[in-house]
Image (cartoon, rainbow, N blue to C red; front, side, top):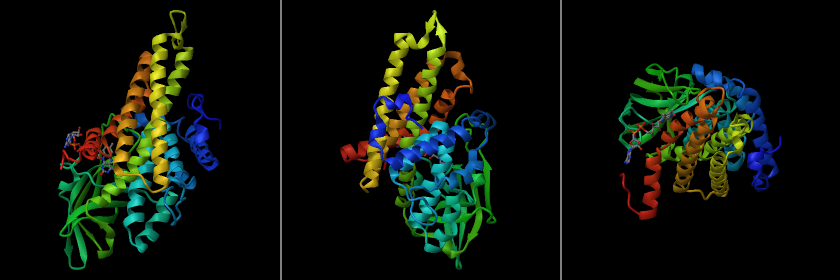
Length: 388
Ligand SMILES: Cc1cc2nc3c(=O)[nH]c(=O)nc-3n(C[C@H](O)[C@H](O)[C@H](O)COP(=O)(O)OP(=O)(O)OC[C@H]3O[C@@H](n4cnc5c(N)ncnc54)[C@H](O)[C@@H]3O)c2cc1C
């Protein structure tokens, strides 16, 4: 599949190797066939794309940058390019893949015991099981350190009580990675969702990320065996390490949503006639397109730079914050600008633009709000933490 003309302008293909191009093209073709024809309807009905889990697993997209246990073991750049193409379809689809691979699977892969890895990773990689990741609580979002969910020893078992809020894939998950306070600080637990005392309740009436399941998890004296704890996850740095993984995918995904907005809008503007000429011929419209394209290209280069750093093991949390803050913020701007070019048509689901814009409002908030990423960058620049 050729590079899209929009991205072709800067000949980005030259920055990618053959395998990266092949993976990107494969994911783009998958989204074209299995997502684009249906996504407007899923979005309107609030249906999550988890029925595609086995297709996504078959393509090796679940936990694709992890190694062993049935995972594809691709480069970080290849994973990023996949996120870009998935989010060009819909942020809900990319969120599903991010939560499965970068939060659920990564937490097990990085911090789990050999037995936990063998039990869950191959099934999660194949899309035969679904995972979720519960860190946020109703009263603790930006400040997860305050969490109230508690795990206490009861004989040889653990007993967990508390609740988690805004959990992607919560009610469709087979296994939940749940973070809880213990007498040894914050620890992670793997909870099979059929365990008595575990309930998931979906959040309804969402105006954003509608093609994604978002749930509240209620943990009412959930009894777990001693080996349910993730042995290597000690302290808040463990879940924050998982968030870095998922944020990295967002850096790329936001570029995909923005690209889709701009491509669709360019096509529309070429055929929509006002004052006897295509609206693409007006200077004001072209100025909008030029400015959107600049931000898109810069966002792509930033994502690629972070990907190359990650592939050589040198990417830092602050660098990922730079990428998330910039690329999501600019993607929303691009989506909103494109919406103006579509005029009235831009407010319907016939075009993807307002759907992307609305999705990006969630993406701006989850995995660290823009304000929190500004504070992370500010702390690195000044040496002073403004928030803890
Ligand atoms: C659709 C969706 C899916 C999600 N999926 C998951 C998931 O799978 N797992 C999970 O654990 N969580 C998930 N989340 C939760 C998400 O990570 C939180 O919503 C996010 O961290 C913000 O927390 P909050 O909503 O409680 O907002 P708050 O923390 O209450 O923030 C409200 C506002 O205050 C600002 N603010 C807070 N502290 C400061 C400060 N010190 N200085 C300046 N401004 C500040 C914030 O930036 C924001 O603008 C999801 C959220 C959404 C919307």
